[in-house]
Image 1 (cartoon, rainbow, N blue to C red):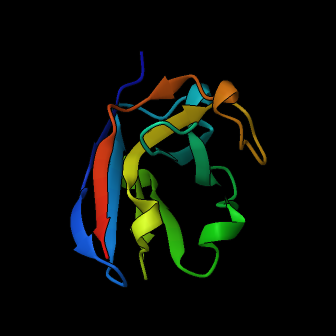
Image 2 (cartoon, helix red, strand yellow; image 1 turned 120 degrees about the vertical axis):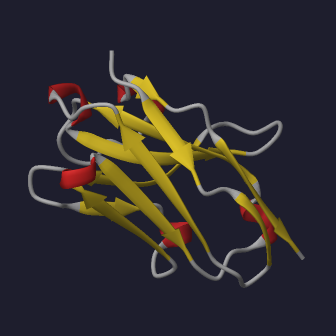
Length: 124
């Protein structure tokens, strides 16, 4: 059973930056793609970004393109989410997830493993 542990959440002013980390207990077929989702109170879980380990392909939700970066470090089994120019509406619990799907895995339903989530609060 793969375990994912997130860290790095917190509070920041609008326009600020945060970096989230997600450490996987192991990299397997089931973690071929690792992604980040977020969920605000009363809203559905929303895709943010994902990266495929095999070739480093990364893809992003339109709302975060140009502001968020995802980096994978195989040596540490860790994926990082760098978030710049954060907006108040991006306040949410951010979840790391892993999927065996290669390619644009943007639906939560294709992810098999989930972290516990980390709170990100952006103050206006």
